[in-house]
Image 1: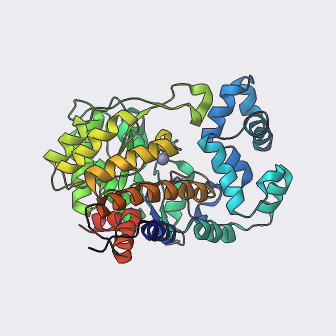
Image 2: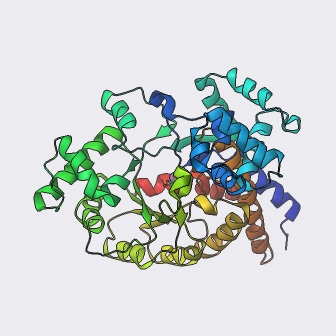
Image 3: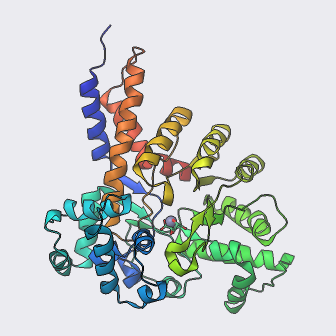
Length: 414
Ligand code: RAT
Ligand code: ZN
């Protein structure tokens, strides 16, 4: 019996993973038409809220004093605190260095002015091309909030679409803050009231349909607190049931649930101030079971929810699990979660998204994740090989391409 050459297998998997063009299904990036909403460059990289949280843990600077600094002054403080006074091996710090290194800069020089200088010589369009090329991604899904004044204006005025940037209609204000957002809808000409009368629900459906037509989103999404329960007697559950689910079916636009955040555990940290909590999987189970004609994407924030989420996905073909979200986007956890998902779900999962807020971050997030996913895949195929099963290089590429994009696109087409 011919046996699979494990050294060759490893090379084939690593090559397939390195060469796969990625669809990054959840980011906070924007196409250039959105102007300064698209963040990029050294100062933005270092000011990432993951690094802000780490700095304010170590530094004694009062929060308000920190926020009163200019962006460049904050960079300098973060750099000194996290990179010079301590070794930068946290995932978020290492990420900055991976980016600079992959861009060909001399990380060992520690020369912040040289790093800034490099970026001063880039144009936004040139740098987008470069970041996509170095990260080897072909498209990213944005997070598009119709309640955000700056972003809304761009959508209403219209713009030239860059096909590499796909839209996702984000519904947090509508679902989580209805007691405030209903006033916006009213001001925009939708006849709604806070009590959610039948007329209001119809108007919310009209609002969603209008924005689906305007944005052509690949999905609608919401980030929900760990206290999310479904069914429930509250505005969030009612709007999901009466508006989001029917509109999602009507337009064949899946609903992405991101569950487990505890917003503003420490408001002094601003964007960096959110925490997490364990969530109740029965909400996801209920939605998948009771709405078989709806398609759900789901990611959960707490490590403790990962196993039951994967088990839930085994039960429901209308559920596609994605990504190691936010506090889970760390090598040890990506490895553990990916391994468990591959064991329970085979190839039918989207192992990762970047959550990049700064364009350059796609470079490190994907470099780090590719390495781990490849490692886990090598183990999976090697275990198969021990049974006598052999995978061809084409089969490896088929699987890898599905994991890094194919599964997402075929789920949308279903
Ligand atoms: O990962 C992040 O940057 C978080 O702040 C959140 O944006 C989260 O990913 C979300 O989409 O709500
Ligand atoms: Zn996000």
